[in-house]
Length: 78
Image (tube, rainbow, N blue to C red; front, side, top):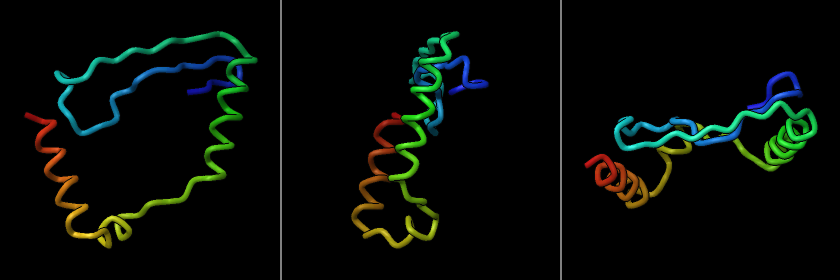
């Protein structure tokens, strides 16, 4: 996360569906404008090479791919 191009936070944020008891969060905050700009530039560069994935794209995936995702998710939850 970049804040006002002067501060940044880097870490593992819990953005998954798993329960919190299975995750550990680590975040480092820096008041460093140069570092914040470099992180923002890296994000914008990655964004240019990215593509949007929609729910419809997911529905079109091969059945076995969806089944493997479902099974993996269930295994991680236990």
